[in-house]
Image: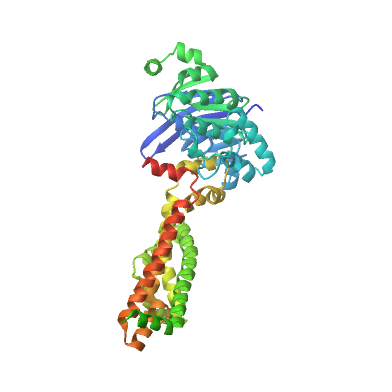
Length: 255
Length: 230
C-alpha cells in the first residue's frame, strides 16, 4: 500500500458570489501527508471536499490516481462517470468529518461493516473479523455492540476513522477531525490518525492542531481567503515562515 | 330509561352494533394501509428533482390536506362516477376518500422526516461509496421511519375517528348502525350516548397503545438522549 498521488490544479469554486477557492494548486505525492492550516473560511475544508467530489468544482482539475475531477464531474480516460461509478471511485477515498457523522441507528460494528459488506460485497464474517481487529487497535474492542449515542466524541471519531479505514482507501481525507472534541479527548484521536490512519496512504488533514501537523506532515500548507499563501516542509513553514500572514497566523494560534 | 332497559336494547341490537364496529375497524385499517403506500409514493415524487414529477405530487398532497374529509367523501362518491366513469360502492368510496385524506398528511410527515436527516449522514454514506439508492434505503429511510413513527400512529387515530362520517353515504359503520337503531327504537339518547362512549373507549385505547409504542420504539439511545438534552 502506498496510496495514490493527488494533484490539485488551479481549482476555483464559488458559492453564489462568494469565491471560496481562487485557483488552488496542491501536489500530494503518493503516500505523503499534507496538513492544511489557516483561518476559518480560508477554503481548507472545501478543497478537501472537492477531492472526493462531495463539492463540484467550477474551474481547474484534480487528479486522484487515474481519475480526474473536472468541471464536468469525475472522469476516467476522458469519459465522465455516472452515479454508480462515482460511488465506486469514492470507495478509494476515506473521509473523516468534523462531526463524526456515524450512523445513529447502527451499532459501532454495524457502522463499520455497512459499506464493506453492502458496497464492496465482502463476506460478513470476514468484514466482522477485520473490524474487530481494527477496533482493538483503537482500544474500542468492547464497544462493538454499542450505539454511537453512548460513546464519547473521541470514541465516536475513532470509530469513524475505523469505518473509513475498512475500505482500505488509497487516500485519506480529514476535515478538522478534532475540532468538535473536548480538549482532553483530542489526544486519543490524533494518536490513532498518526499511528494507524495515515500509514501507507496519501493523506490530507485539515487541522488547527499545529504541533500535530508539525509531527506528522511531510508538507504544511497555509491557506487564506481561498488561496495557498505558503507551502513547505513543517520546519520551514513553522520555524521560518516567509510570508507575514503566515507568521501572524502561527503566532496567533500558538499564543 | 333504566340500566336494564339499556342493556336489553344493546342485546337486541348487538349484531348490528358489532357489524358496525367491524366496518369501522376495516375502513380505518384498509384506508390507512393504502394511505401509507400512496403517501410514500407522493413523498418521494415531491422530493424528486424532476419538475414534471414533483409538481403533480405537491399538488396532490396539498389537495388532500386542504379539503375537508366530508367534502372528499361526497366528491368521490357522487362526482367520480361522472369524472372517471366508474361507480364505486359506498364502502370503496369511503376507503378512497379516507385514504386520500391520510395520504396527504402522511406524505408531509414522510417528507419532514426525510428532510430532517442531517446532511452529514448523507455525505458520510456517499464518502463510503454508497449509491443514492443504497444510502436512501440503508441510512436515510430507517432513521426517518423512527422519527416519523409517532406521526404515522397519530394519523391512524385521526383516520379512525374520521370513519364516523362515512354513514353519510350509507356505509354501514358503527355510526350508521346507531342511526338505524335510534330511528327503530325512537330512543336516540341512549344509543348515541352508548356510541359516543364506545368511540371514546376505542380511541383512548388506540392512542394509549400509540403513546406506549412511541415510547418503546427502538431509539438506539439517541432520541432518549435528545429528549434529555432538551
